[in-house]
Structures are given as C-alpha cells and as structure tokens.
Length: 495
Image 1 (tube, rainbow, N blue to C red):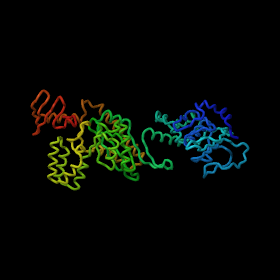
Image 2: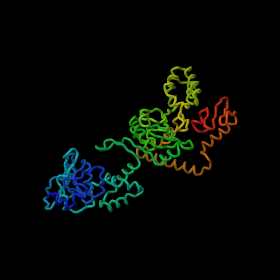
Image 3: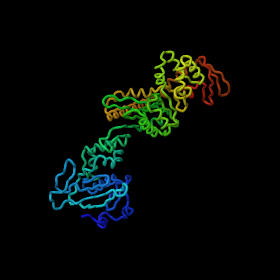
C-alpha cells in the first residue's frame, strides 16, 4: 500500500527540513547530504532523479532495479522483491508468479509532467527484505564522482584500502574491478582533459586528449622566455592519429616541453581546442606578450588568429624555403633567401630582397606576399628576446617521441609523462651542480663576443653614445637607452 503525504512526513521529516515546501533538485545539488524522498518532490531532469534514487538506496542499504526507465517515466522496485527468477536478457523481474506471501513492496514511480521536470507520483519506501551490502547501482561512475577529491589527495592509495574505505563509509561492498575503474576515471578527470564521441550511445570513441603537467606549466611561466613552438607529428602503427605539441626554450637554450595533445586528425577545431587550453594554462588568454612559432599547418593559422589574436606569430624559415625551392631551386636562391631571413636591419632586408628580385621576380613576389614580421629578423617583435628562425624545438621533441609513436594511446601518454619527468629531473640536478653565474650556453656566447670585441673600433659621440665599427660595418650604440643599431641586442639582449 502506498504511503500518503502524512505518513511520509512522519518517516522523513517535515517540509521545513528541506528549507522550502517543494524544492527542485538539480545537477548542482549536494547529494552528499541525506536524500528525503516524498510525494510531489521535483527533479530538474530524469538524470537528476536517477542520481537521487541511487544516493537514497546507498543511504538505506538496499538495491533496486528499473521496471521502466524512459525519458518520460521511471519505475523502480526493490532488487530482492521476491523469489522469481531474473530475466537475464532484459536484466529485470517480470510479473511475480512465485506466490510469496510477503514480497518487498518498495516502489518509486516518477513522471515527466511539466517540460523536463520529473515529479514523484507514487511512493512506497518500506522494505520487507533484509538489508544488503551489495548495490549494483554503485558503479565506477558513482564512485568517481563521490570520491574525486579523495583520489586527488590520496593518489598512492591501494585499491584494497579504498574498498575498505567505501565499505566503512557507505556500507556497500564494491568489487576490485569497479575500484580500479573508478581510480582510472578519477585520474583522467584530475590530470587531463579528454573528449570522446558517443558518450550517450556506448561504447564511447576516443577523440582527443590534452596534457599540461604542473611542473611544465610553472617552469615555462617562471623560467622560460615567452616563445613557444607548436607543431604536430604523425602517430604510427595500428593507432593512427596526430600529436600536437607546444615546446618552449629554457635558460640554457634547450627545449622545454610545455603541453601536448593527442587528436584524431589535424584540423582547425583540434588546433583551436589545444590552443585555448594552452593559453589558459600559461596565463596568456589572448596571447598578449607571447610569440608562437609554427610551420603554417592546416587550420593552425586560423586557430591562432581566433584564440591568441594578440600574439606575435613567426613562421619557420625552413618551411618557407621548402615551399620556395619547389619552383626555384639552386644554391644561389638558397643563399639569397637565408640572407633575407637573417637580415637584422631594414636596409639589409631591402638589399637582399632586391637581390632576390634580380634572380626571379616570381620568387621575390612569393616572399613579398608573406609579411616580414613573420619570418625576417629585422621585423621581429623584441618582447620574447629570441631571434629564432626555425621551429627546431618541436622537431627535437618530436624526435625524442620516436619510441612512443606506435604505442596504444594510454601507453604512449604514460611514456611521454615519464620522459618529461626524467628530463626535468636531470636538468634540475645539473643546475644544482653548476657553479657559473649564467647558463653554459650564455657563458659560451659571451666568451665568443668578448673575443670578437678585440676587432671592434669605437669612437665616442657623447656621454652615452658611441659609433662602433666591426668588420666593415658601422653601428651606433647607446648605453643609456640600451640600444644598438645592429638590432641584435634588441632581439636577444646578448651583445
């Protein structure tokens, strides 16, 4: 017999306990608090109702099954309703035919009445069966949602210990496999962003996976120049796809991996997704003050202009030359092109471009169509303090991933995590044992500059300004403004 409203109030408290006469549960509701089911209770959707039903069953130590589970109507019965055999194909009991005298009458009936609001219309909460520590509705998804913060703070806990913790807190025995799946789900939620298709119609299909480790993020922000190389590499074997990477440069001019992303194909949407997460992680939401080096891949240019419109964009000079030499090959074209790319002043750039125009007007037109700020040093922005022309940082990192490219997705990502972890550890230990004032690369460069300065002749113009002549070239150096006419100091802050 179903309970009426007065009986339910006596069993589960008055309306005042909920804070209002008829609350509506939604996805943001705190289901860690006791759930009090009663007639007329509203739920924002059928998903919220199911979640509340599972939580109620856990709190009261009973399992249940759905005799009807649709978008417009849900009917739940006690899992131990009677002694009839289960229909294994439909995974539920049919109409009771065992003739048991006192079957369990637990039943909850809810309907979709107004828009998507689900309301409990019939209710009988009393059980005639014995409480059980087994609840089939407590799956890996439920455990992950409930214990996500637990796994965040106890990542080294053993699964057997977690099983005991769940049994003590919820009074529910869960299998080892469910605990393992819950921990795997939690790790994905804590450490990475994953996008899948067909979530509502299993099995889900892997789509893309983004990783930016905390050590990489903080290391780039605090210890690297604001320049990133972005590139892609093909995954081999039976697990095809693409790996998108973002690599910085550390204080010793070595590569510093920042983030990577495994996607099914290289296109504008995947590049946009990757860059949005990356820009948010490094604190450059619109790219202001950031320089990005790329090979002008498919969809990347559009994604950069959309996600980081304020960033300075550079194109890999080797990639531009590879396109140019398809039509204009030969050592003379090659030497002239690289002289144009390496030109540090506007005058040198114009002179070398005239040389290219003399060789071929079509080759000159090809280069002239690409804005110089993207590929010639004289037009680079000074903020990142780098005169980098090539996207070698990404090429080096991609080469290091050679052994991981043919592995399954999770194995591949675990290999990459260990590689980056070991690399960071090695660099840290090396820095501890180094006794120089600056990094070895910078010290070596300064030694070269000191030796080269022996051939320089200078004349003082005023208190802070000098005219310097070196190997037939004359430039003006202003010590007060910290500027040099050769433009190299402005680009790199190295003499």
